[in-house]
Image (cartoon, rainbow, N blue to C red; front, side):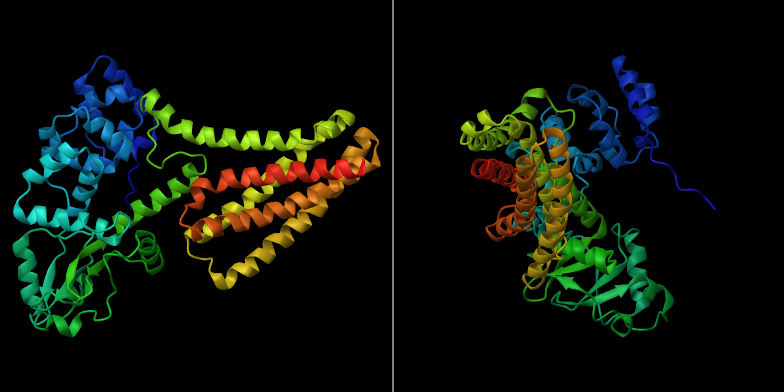
Length: 452
């Protein structure tokens, strides 16, 4: 049995070799290193070296692979590279791309580059491009390929086979052929397995899948990706409101979407874009982060203002200042756990209005158990530390209060944000941290003011 080849780009040694070769611009070594790499690996390699050296590396890439490499690059890295190329070079690179990949290029590149690409297209290519760009950014229409192979239902399988042989090739990720009538209305799908195993004299309509799934071009990319994952689809037809076949969406695009969504949830939580370029220039990266840090600074001042309200209490009992961060920290962690589960549940479509109430009860119950458990622990520790039962009881009570509030915040914040159209993965963490810090300080210092 032949073993699957390993991806060389996963080896840090390759990056070191490339950087070493770039120092002397040893083209022979670079060409040899690139010989067996896929477009996705070359793109990841470009993103793994400083921005200033990408132009040199780009000149080594074979011209017939330039377009595929551009597609695989993150948006920020792609824009940085294209800004250092002539418009003619970009046009030549993207000349063989599918309509959906070309639409992504035009949509993310400078206007003058997009105009140059449009001018280079023939009538059919321009039609396909404009059709893709006409749909909303996060819709199925934006990732739809118009190059789907379509056949009529009233022909024989033998005719289909002759038709395919005359084409010499079919689009990648083709598991079936779209079946249409004379008006291009979608009727079903002829799976390649059925085409190859049934009698060639049979008609397409006799063996085609008449229940084949089709989707609207306005369908959400997220919902479509979930459908591909759950139903193990390879491709799906895209039809308009009149049932006319527009194109198809393929598995490779859905994998990219799921990957981007995962990156968005991870990086969005700390104010970074999913296309953040690891080796981009310093100033652009700093500008993108300043806004997020400014928001966090505002929340920090809010927490400091709350603490300042209890200045007199803190001056009288120094132990409170020592113990105060414990309550806020535990609340932040507990709330973060609930928030993460909620964001994941909302993203995967597992949370609805029907089951949300049960989930809220569950999270509150878990926080109550956690709160009482750790209240006993911190109460005992603080008693042995400061030998003051009242401080221990105040700390324990505030621990329970803050963990309950943390659960409610972790549950309620993403639900509310989704309802008003704000991405909870992007802003939920900041709001949660503010809530748990403020409630933690108010509960601990407020109880201390009342009872100590």
